[in-house]
Structures are given as structure tokens and as C-alpha cells.
Image (cartoon, rainbow, N blue to C red):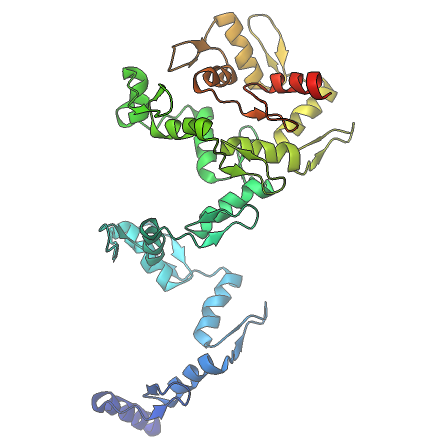
Length: 372
């Protein structure tokens, strides 16, 4: 016990004298204790003396192994005093606490914006530098953060990990799922007074004018898309067949129709489907089940959405109105097709010639007439 006390006293004295007698032969760094230099040397030698007996991962320091083991045990010893959340790392708790304290210690030198985490500042800085270090291996697109790339990759893979529990529709990202869920719940969290674009539907204000023609638009994004009709720009390119599109949604539809693997196969016929919702609907055609009945004429439907569209025939409701000419439609797809008369958009392009059409049916008729 006296030896231990003497060692502690000697170490304490060295902190005042500044004496660090243990020198690294690789980088000339000096240390107070022999144990410190031993740990440091592993950085140079690559030695990882502490190995996990569950997954064989190895670590330079025992403390790193201790933290790693929590991934296997699920242990989370660090508790937030504000909301009872638990964390496996003390550093994770410290970062989390900033949600409650509002602390944002990382500040951008260009615009003064502050962040709670350093990686948030790093990603933000790329908006100033234009740096996009994450490249898509399918279509040469670049992204400023790895998470954006992961979401984008789902366009190519067809992965839609976020599924609606109400109707089995699935989505590429969680934000799209949350927006969709509001259609079921009827929730409208954004007040009219805060939605500039929506207000213009009331005022009919269209401040964004096309420099190529006389068309005006209520928001800048609509103008940017419209200008592609004049410039011929099609920024969304398929990485598998080099077809390109004005809209990202058209690219996604193309990928599903032409390159997607049809993993849902019907056991009663040879049909196969890209998504679960269509597959479940198809199974009902075999069973004859049509659970949704019209109260006006007793007609039955496979899907609730089909019933809702049908009911508008009886009620005369036309909830989808054109902002350009105030014409109204009972179905959203009818409005979408109508809007192309204003924008000049022709998204259905013939792969055998240069003709393009505003409706899919017109494209099919063209192919039969001229290329069939």
C-alpha cells in the first residue's frame, strides 16, 4: 500500500514540475506515465489488444471495448434528466442535452448560423462551398451529405422502407410517409396564413414570369420546371437505360415500370407486381371481394379510393381546381392532365421517334398507328 501511495505522490509531483519522462519513438510525444505511452504506441503499431468475444471486433483501448459491448447487451447507462431517454455513450447524452438547453456551440463563420452538433455545421458549410462529396454510383449525381445519397439510392433500388399502416402504401423517406398519413387522419398542421404559395391561390398572384413565353406562375419551383420545356433540360436520368425526364416522379415511375423487380407473384395466375398494395388488390379479383359499397347506387369497389371517386359522380363534387383558368375536376389525375394544356408539358415520349404526348393513351395510339 505504501508503494502505491509513493507512486501516486511521484506522479502528482511530476504534474507540477512538467516532467514527462516517457517519450514516443515514433512521434516524439512525451507522457507522464508508462501506461499512457503504452496505450499511445498502439496508434502507431496498430495493435488492438482488446477483442470482443461476441463479434471478434478489436480495439486499442479497454474503454473502447467496454462501450462497444453495450451494442450487444443493449445497456444504456447514461440517462437524460429531462426526458428519461437513455444512451450508451456519455458523449451521446451530452449532444442530446442540447435539445433541452438550446445550446448550439458550433457557428458558421459565413452566415452566423449555429448548430448543436459539429457534423451539422460541416454539412451546412457545403451550402457555401458547393461541395458535394457523396456520389451516386448509378447516375453520377452528387450530394452534400451521406443521408441524402442513401435516400436517393432508393430511386434506383426501388426500396421503400416506410409503409403506411392504414393502406400499405410505401415511401422512400419518412417525411413523405408523414405527409401521406395526414390524408388518413385529416390533420392539417400548416395554417393558411403561413403558406405563401397557398395564399396566392386566393389572391391569384403570379409573381414569377417565364422569359421565353407569357406564362406566369405562383411559385418559383413551378417556373423552373416549366422552363425545362423551353430549354429541353431533363435532369433526371435513368442509370439503367439513359432515358431522361423533366420530373423526378416520372423517373421513379419509369424505374418501377421498366426496371423494377416484380417481387409479389400471384399463386393463382402468372401476374406479378412491383408493390404490395397492387398485389393485395389483384388477389381480390380472384376472390371477387369488393368490400366498399356506394350508398347511392349499391355499386361495390375493390378500393376505398375508387369508391370515393365514384361518389363524386352522384354528388357532383369537383375538389380539384385549376389555378390558371378555374376549371374544376372530380379527380386529381384529370387536373394533372389538364394543367399540361397550360404548361405545354408532354411527359410521354415515344422511344422510336421524337414525338411526345401529354397523355399516355395518346402515346399508345401513336405507337400502334405509326410503329405497330
